Length: 209
Image 1 (cartoon, rainbow, N blue to C red):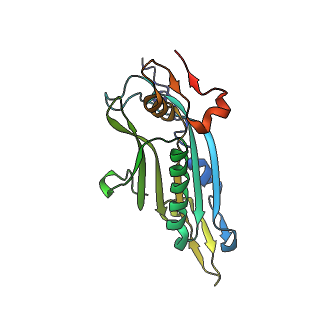
Image 2 (cartoon, rainbow, N blue to C red):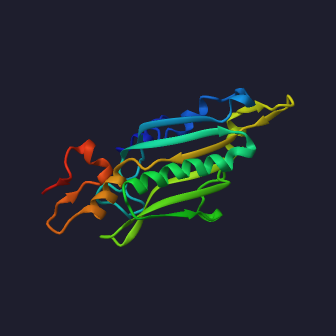
Image 3 (cartoon, rainbow, N blue to C red):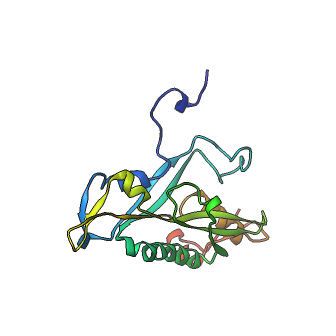
């Protein structure tokens, strides 16, 4: 008998707050003057597998339950690229505040993930112990692909109905941020220096073993 709840029910746990955020405007027609609309959520998310086909099965890199920050937006078609860059800039600013070594990758179509993706960036942080980069989040301009399925439109200045554009961005919260800080800030004696920007929240400048 399987212990996997997804094999016993048609119900499933949310993997991202993106679908319910966009579903808020499902079957709605908006006034163009109300766009862009920006949405923000921090939720617990779930995945059925631990690890990835036998990889990353140890530690907290891929776990069943994790907290994730989602920044999403509905925009006019001509504004989605600007919004995508705006959300990407927020994540870059956060990584810079944490002083973590990172890079941003413009994903090719074969690695974009799914058909909704028009343009996608991944941002990754360097892990010096594992000598590899770890994906911290992604940033996607879906154009009107999702809007057509959600049936979310707007009325333009000429009175014509058009589909909005969807932009979604996964922020840098969750277990992987902890991994990145531990690997980049651990000292030879086993202590971990707290990033400068976090010290006032943690109440100390170092965690000792």
